[in-house]
Length: 415
Image (cartoon, rainbow, N blue to C red; front, side, top):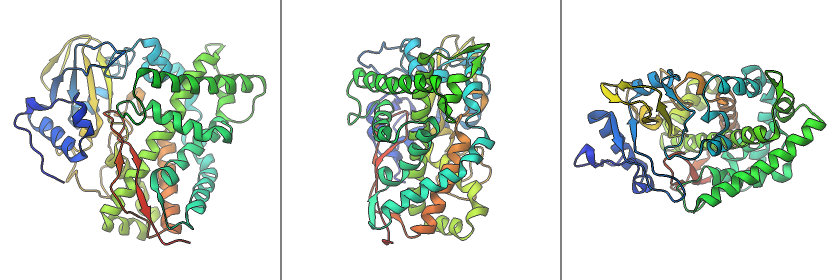
């Protein structure tokens, strides 16, 4: 890791687009300095066209502070938005559904979708996850090289979430493209204006409405049918409400897991001893290896909350209505919590990372499914393409929100 220093901790601006276009080591140095010298710091908001510029936000960078605050959802609320910039709450709910809600509404809506992601349901999906992973490797195995992200990492979560929702195969590629746009804010390859974002969201919403209406009339055994026929206090969801659910599920169920798998493969290439340890005892090491991949990748970099009353964090006063941003990437490298946090260790203990959020009511709904997909994908790679390695630098997504990799070459012995 390149040693990058800042003259003063006050020189660090987490809203600076240049910081997020810089290599990872530059950002790591910034967050390391904040953790050491100013773990709760205030930052001005980035001026964005079409988004009103807010008064700024508090940045939480230490593991313990974020862990504690995440579990106090009454004090640090989500119902005023989870993006740093302010957008109308109706739009926030349209793009993020229950992520941008608080109890009791959040609890009721999460309860509907939760049944599709409980461990028993995920266990029932295992055969399909294994079959899809095998098909993905079948397609690339004769080639000897490919783009790891688009040809391997992205394919598994995309197929699984689309199959779960009953999305026609003919639309899978388009769903992939649209989710890239929705989570690509900040990267000019995907989004150049707010209109790009809204256009992608509306197209996904139209897919959802058409699918939801079809399943309401003629239900099958997919998750869409279950959601469309579920009741909340005696009422079923409208197709509009389902549309926001749908956007959340296809975006979160696709992008974040592919990011974890991509970073995991890069880490296993950079730390060959760790790969050897895992391959020698796949089942025994898998539980901690999967958690280490998620910690290492931290696919979602941050979420914002809003203080519902005056409080303080680490002795710093925070006023009612202030924005508070949880920087999960920093928490997952916190030297006070992790031993040697910049080392990739497939047997690392403890495994209480914040890669799925910090717990509480907004803990990642798809965590069980993501773990299963990561494990199955690497099991298939180790079995079928045991010498697969990343052969070039990753093309990183420019984003303060998603730690994404857009492209990354790999090579292996053709089979």
